[in-house]
Length: 391
Image (cartoon, rainbow, N blue to C red):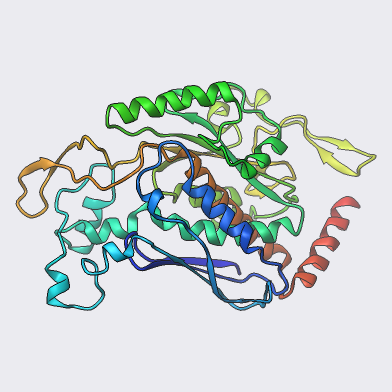
């Protein structure tokens, strides 16, 4: 089974990603992983932390001479901001280091601060925010890049674009997948929107938030193309792939809603205008759909159409004009704490969304086809595809 875990804090020495279950023999392109890490750091409205960090993956185990060897993969991602925090957040209990530590006692509304302090019995939000920070997603993107490289081996591509920032939305989001893929190679990414005029209005939305010392959210869309039918299962509730993907995307910091296909609009109309008719292309020997309102998933299983997932991102909760809060120690009214942060993170969240969708699909793919080596997985996959074509 494909599994992954992350470790590390926002201002700690490093972040770490662990991924196990990938078959041996997968070619690993380190430049591809680092490109995704760079994409996660980009976009208009990012904060000062992005000027400090320049994320690069250091693979410590599980890859030799450019290929996976079937053992767990560990990836180290150094925090360049660590020298500024190594005394304040020292691992050892040293008096001189403790003297430089500054408790953070006014929790931020909308952040993990208060709930985490109540859970772990801290009257200081520092240790909560260090782990709850979206900096953690750096590890997810590194692991997700490996999952995307695996899926690509079998003709599956995963990409994202931005469909809304604040009050500005892309009117026609039915865009060519090739154009979405091409966004990954552009150096001039502003907000990851494919329509220049809409992107300019999105930029103005971010500018307004900057001017008013506020933050702004939005919507990203992740599309996976080339996914075969039959991943996931209808047999048990926790085997349904749409539920797994929704949970994976919902776990991304600041995501508060997830949509698969045109799920939101579907709820407001009749079934005759929602469900995707089924046809059959005899020349190509496969079933076809004129529409894809289901977003590629029916009954918890992939149906061979594009997987389409949207993540709805709230405005981030670190505000330069802080909201009302209460001091955790004195219980007196105070302004919430302010941590150096971004104004808009929607394009970056889309990159993280890609990683989470890719990891979910790769896990489901390996659950169905197995294989200790890429060659074995390929044989199993090819046999199944042949079965589907002969159906």
